[in-house]
Length: 112
Image 1 (spheres, rainbow, N blue to C red):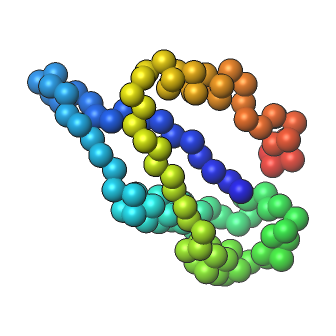
Image 2 (image 1 turned 90 degrees about the horizontal axis):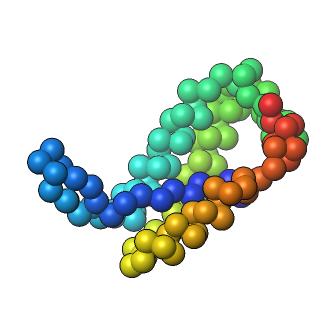
């Protein structure tokens, strides 16, 4: 199952250098993410995509569009972790992913 890990701060500095808290509304974020990915996929010409064997039946732009528009609304889940209270825990967590990629290049080679 394709997924993305994203780590963001719980706020940021404004133009005057004052910290402003930032919060995320889960359902709004889920919908926005779903539509952005769907729009991106619909913009891609089918001829430029490498399809996995399970999608070999997708032969035309209309097949591609139908797949994205029908399957694209299902199973879009997001998980928002609790804010970490300790920066060291965050560094250790991120370090595991930054030290080595979660998927080796050889496992991804057939998509290029």
